[in-house]
Image (cartoon, rainbow, N blue to C red):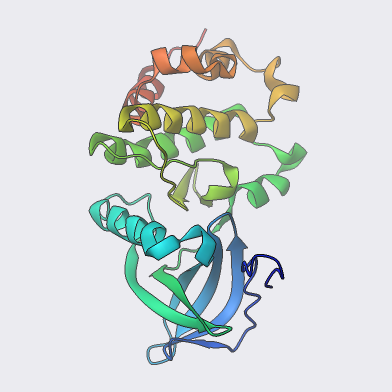
Length: 244
C-alpha cells in the first residue's frame, strides 16, 4: 500500500498470475523484510522458477541498495552459501519505476519455520553443532575474500536436512558503516547467536555441555570476538574441539 503522507510503498501485495517485466509470472510471496519483498516467480518462456526481490523505493534511493547488492553477489558468486544473482529488471507499480533483482530459487525453508516443527521447537546440541558447522564453513570463503553478510539471523537462513547434516543458504545481504573487519566479526557473532537460538536459547543454556558453552561464550561480544575473528576460525575450532 501507499501511505498518504509520504507516498511510501510499504507492501506490493502482488497476486499469483501477475506478470513482471513481461517475463516472469508471480507464483507466491516468499517473504518480506526491511528492503522489500521476495516472490517466487516462473519464467514464462522456460517454466523455470526464480526468486524476485522487489525493493521498496525509499529503501533503494537511486538504485544504490540494489546495485550494491548485485555487485556484491556477483563478486561472491563462487561462494555456494549465497543465492546466485542472475539479472536486474525494472517494473512498473502504480505508475512508479521499481527495481527487482532476479536470483535462483532455492528449495528449503526458513530456519525459523524449521525450528517450530522440531521437538521442543529446538535442535539438540549435536544437531545445532552440525548446523553451526555448515554455516561457518559456508561463510568462510566470504570472509576470506574480505567481505561480510551483515544480517545473519534465523529468518535469513534457508535450510534443508541432508542425512546427519544440513544444507544451508543465507539471504539478504546488508551493508553497514564501519570497517569490513568489524562487520566480519559481527557475522561471527550472528552465527553463534543463530546456534544459541537453534538449541533453545537462554531457557536451555544451563543444561548444555561445557563444550557448547565454550562456543557461545555467554553471547558476550568481546569474548566471542577474541576467540573467533572469522568464520574460518570458528570452523577450525569446531573441527578440533574437545569434549570433557
